[in-house]
Image (cartoon, helix red, strand yellow):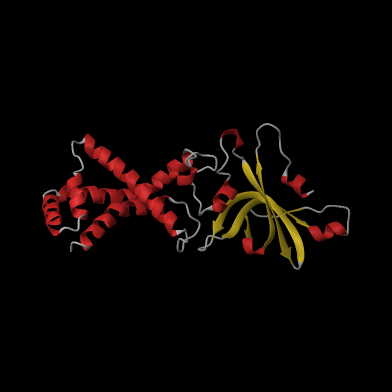
Length: 251
């Protein structure tokens, strides 16, 4: 038991941080996390330190303080020291359980709120001084297709998508405004949802001088990413100078 108890104590101390790390990260992959082991451990430990600092601060305000002698005694391999620490911890088992359970619940249920605050305060942007901690590195499509790295007057009013798709062996250009996007379980882009879409057959440009642009009927148009040969993303600001229309892009 003198060997297993320290490992159990370390596990319970670090567990809330690792749960918080997994919940706060915006990931496009639903399957296993292939992040480097050292990165996972470092981030999990850092989140654990942050959570314990908050909880211990709240306990100090309530008049309760951490007894390091008990904690170090539980981590000790000496049977006598460990037994004494267990007896002292048993006298406070209710408070210790409340401390740990509240951390686990907060890590599981309040972390999505933390993620929304990170996005709201732009802490994850590439130029943020704390981007190394809060950057959603497993969500590259999120930053490309949402304009999340823009702030203030630079935030785009719409995102224009120009995609070349092979139809019946000929390249066709589709242009429209991005409405939404979806990724598969592997984190790869699966499909784009566009509106106000226009189509232009590029092969006909070589046979005639007249550019033929066709509006596509319907409220939304879905493009499968696996069918796209090339993809162009343009961030459009409507304030100030009026940008070119989608028809102008096609022409």
